[in-house]
Image: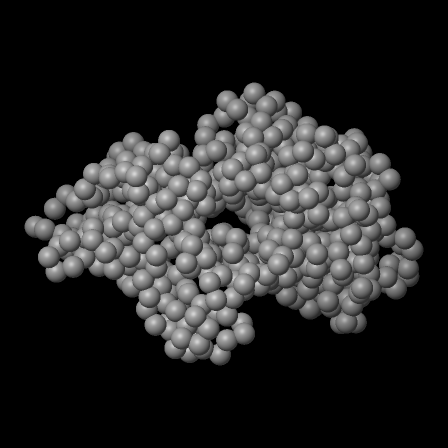
Length: 396
Length: 170
Ligand SMILES: [Zn+2]
């Protein structure tokens, strides 16, 4: 186990399609987090930005971009990128600085302004770039990979299209209660079934949209929190940023093939379960201790996959857990009480930070209509393409 | 004016033989580490990626010509660039097949051959790697690999199908 860091403040810019710069969303989220923490920007010792690849050069140096927008005040700066896991890496960087004594209080910010339609690779001919190759050779969009995973689950575990639709129904109902969500309407299974197929077997309402949004956290040492008058803050107890182990035998975005297991036996534990296990080990906790989970439901079927990878149930039992209502509000282990990506749409570098914002409000007991009763331990999980694990455990 | 044929990526699959036979003996090409025997596709030519192996000698090796479907899907919407398609033509869905190669113990993605539809596919079904055309431009026919169920024989892939072609005619 490692020492805790305190979550002093959480803030978000509402998700949507606002048509403005990521800098504005991130700055708004940062100001909200600072206000929530009751910390002045000038007292922040370090700022960590989660990069976006869609905002030009300012997006690659997001930490400095947000620092400038908030007003240069001399803070230490870092900018990190790990695709969907960028937010977790930013949190991990801030936490490392706090635990090592380099900084007392750190601002973490991520924001994105999403394009219309499919995510696509950067321009130019780059035959050495797997992300470029999968589009050039195969036209393999992100939803195509989600379709492959979903079809595989149906064949191996007997998941049905109705199961997938019920994930959307659950998350849309939660999102309807969240003022920060982009989609705030309940959705019926019939509406899911009537939406257009994007990548068989998945339909438009099975797949998350891409959104504009921003999220920020103010993290500090426990000592700073005490001095600041927050003796019992939400604490981050673990941040898992693990990579796969060779041979990685699960087809991962943006790869065209898996590693070969012909010469070296695959690890007993595949990549995604290893992300959660590393977090559980670091926190000295386990799936049985969880009050809630925020998982990366890029598709409805992927939410079910996370149930198994987090150890909420045995492999192949995720649809059963869903059908029992265990992951719905009021269930044994509510999953995505925020509404998840189904209700937000993905704002890549902000998303993993937004997951921790939701944990913070749930663990404080200030989540309003979507509050999980008696929430004490929460976990987030996601995976960034190119082999980035991301999982955060927070406690109160 | 006739187009030259060129692989869309060099060294990932066998090119046609001198007599123009593209069907016989078509193989995906990977590399194998001479120290630990790990196989790589896409090919690794400089370092072995097995973390326990110091290998620096990787030799080209053809992959199994056939495998079994691990999963499959299709693209109902036109993929963005750098995928090439004719914006003038209505988009036709294209199957994508992930294939498990038994000997290599790996899964390799590929487009289904032209004419292969979802109804033709099932998980566990045997498929084979066949030469295909990704798209054509003014002076080049870009070749690739496709997966095709072994129980079927698709149309000869002399030209790009409508979904893959750029529509530029010489
Ligand atoms: Zn080797």
